Amino acid sequence: MSKYLVDKFLYTVDRDPDLVERYREDPAGTVTWWEAERANCVLNCHLGEASTWLKFTDAERDALISQDHVKLFELGAHPFLTLTLFIAMFERDNTEPLEYQKAFGARLQHFDLPYPDIAT
Amino acid sequence: MATVVAVIASTHHPFYLKASTATGDERPPFADEWVRKITAFRETLTRANPDVLVMVGSDHFHQLWLDNMPQFLVGKAPFYDANWYNEEREFGLPRMFFTGNEDLSGYVLREGIDRGFDLAFSNELRIDHSITCPIITLRPEADLPIVPIYTNIFAPPLPRPKRFVQLGEAIREIVEAWPSDLRVAIIGTGHLSLELGGPRQFGPHGPDPEFDRKAVEWIANGDVDGCLGEVTLDSLHAPGNATHGFMDFMLMMGVAGAGQKADYVDSLDLFHTMEAYFTWYPNGVNA
Image 1 (cartoon, rainbow over the protein chains, first blue to last red):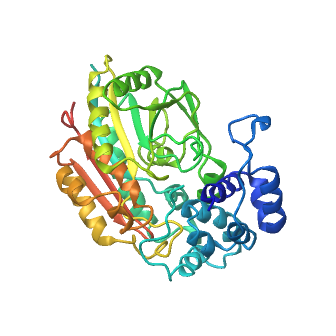
Image 2 (cartoon, rainbow over the protein chains, first blue to last red):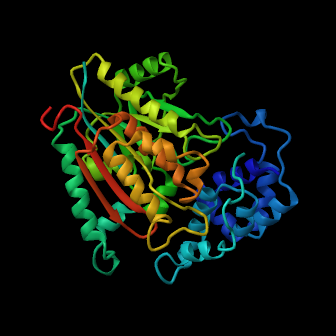
């Protein structure tokens, strides 16, 4: 499990307008590029001081590539990060207010308490 | 010594600005009532005539991240830029700019650390909607210097509820001991029951109206013991997966003081979450 890295992907994409569009249009390419080029960047450090050990599990990589927010919830990704990024990518397709937000919740209806652990 | 002229606890609903300024078909049916309630709530701060605002909130994964996450952090900077691209994108919040009060920030840090709170600090802090929302609702002129204090209600492991209450008590004591003749309002925002990114989000009400009813009662009555008797880190999962933000309300109960009934209480049942507004005048309304 590398919940931290999944959260890091969601966080770094969500805060960058260009990456939000890139992930929406090309999820597989963006995830592959990000894991190779960005996953090990320590956010507050010079690029030469990158980490060496961070990588997704296959399940995490697949969930991000398929933009499967239900699977991300199951894997313990931070739900605030997932929700914020996915609203950014898909709310624009709404035909009525809150349509995407409500559908997002409806797709998670099979989860009961306790929800998957989000501690990193 | 400084005077605490008002203690204010509030929800921070990022859609207030958008709802309150929308017109025509875009204007939600609840907007007029919401504006009326906010206008009345704003008056509770205005009448206290503060010089400085201590603002308690929580960074929503903007500047504070999991590679270096403080539990409690005090901003100590001459200025603060505010609001982020994703808040502009999702909520329509504008970029904002505030002056700081470094003297009070430094005093809170020194005294807080000496009282056993190992406070983190930031000399360059871009603040987010947990602090700008109450500025928009309570002081839209954004003309007063601020001291931002961030709590971690977001990234486990979290401090326990009692620690939030204790920090609130300490903040009150520290501000009252600050060698200054300024009038200080202490304002903090959190949530009642709330679900974000889970199955119970964006319902017709908050995810747990019964929790909300009890929470409003605890806060309004200053019932710190009753609240601490029922609220734990584990119990807060039940009312909604983002309900740990309620601990910022508990911090504000500590600021107001155990047993202190709020002088002003209001709430508004909205879709997705309940709004709640509380004001205390520790030294009387005419202090």
